[in-house]
Length: 153
Image 1 (cartoon, rainbow, N blue to C red):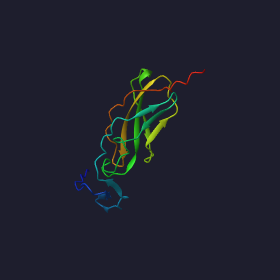
Image 2 (image 1 turned 90 degrees about the vertical axis):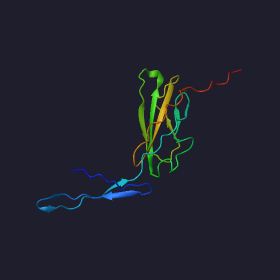
Image 3 (image 1 turned 135 degrees about the vertical axis):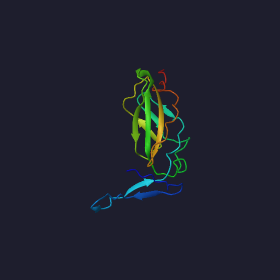
Image 4 (image 1 turned 135 degrees about the horizontal axis):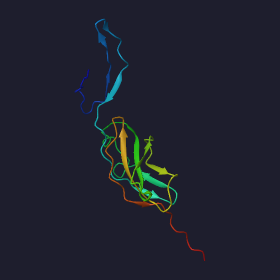
């Protein structure tokens, strides 16, 4: 059987549910409580800001040019980020997903798998206990390269 709960409204936090099975012999013991948080998924973040060197790529974990506020997260506790990264020059046109569980991080750096001279682009999703946002727009391309060294005299 299915039960649709319609008592969820803004400002209310967690509702707990227990289920009791009933058959002709009687009712069983109640299940362990299961919590449901009443909030919509978080809003969609802007396209991420990328910074690269020849061997690493950093992504700002920002919502809209700053770390997300509780209001932008629809008052639901954050659980992390999903970074979708694409090596534009690998010929696959596929985004690989990396999950970041550190909710205090404002930046994530890839230090392996970055190829010097390749262009990268990324998208972000911010996640709360309710679920993840829609993915952001795709970032601008960033070239994995380091500034040139000063010439020798």
